[in-house]
Length: 346
Image 1 (spheres, rainbow, N blue to C red):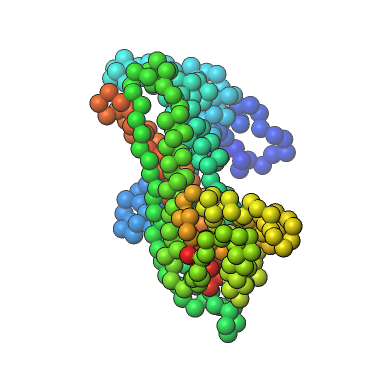
Image 2 (tube, rainbow, N blue to C red; image 1 turned 90 degrees about the vertical axis):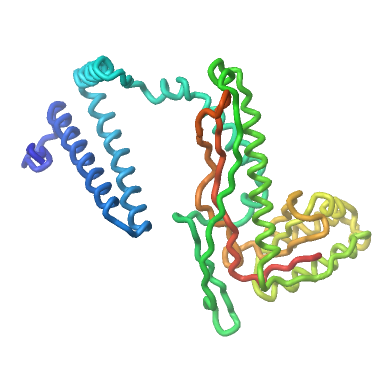
């Protein structure tokens, strides 16, 4: 630093406006220097894990530059005029055009459609989810996760560890350039992409559960009467309860669920009302599971959780012919730690 930092001056009064502007300029310089430092470190780091951290911190420092500049520009109108003057000189010399617009102006500009499409996509995902809303969730940083297999036979302890990659789920869609330019595009295409992403998400979770080694399996009948349905679900619950105290949940297909919407012959109550009192971990209805399979499980993080490596998001890929390509994506997996607390009726 070539200037004297005003924070080091002994004083008993707050900064004047001029001193505060000086402090903001020094803070901006310090952040820019930090960006250069971390990016240099990343270039000379072979280990991708460490390189990723250096680059991530550098991006954070760039955001700090923007924060300090925003404060400075709010105090110094002359600085705004000089910046705009510099932009004009660069455009005159090179043809490169730069604008100093507010965030609101940028959102309403030529890429305002991206904000609209992203909101439509995320809203569809939020409304369409069943399993991800109801299961325990853990957000992690990285492209893989560790699974700790928990046993309680000789004290509660981890008996096995393994690492698995977090799959990336994507949906690509296209909108015509003309529609984007004149604003006549329909956000429904982003809604559909979100619905398809949720379908893939729930299929992934169910398939991972069904293919896990060590889960228990029992026979599933046709449930021609409520007594049969109740007996099979209670038997599955009893098996799962040997490995967990719950709460217990059920994952079931809509058609199979419809068979629970009947009055129980012996109790005189709707069977579904009886089951809701027992399965406090939720009765999760989704078409992503086969009609001839029902999953009874302990809905607790000690048994399973959904690992989220990347929240759902939308990116503009760019023009492809007369259309613009967009990519909706997310990264998640299900982590099963105690398969003995999961029972599949099939």
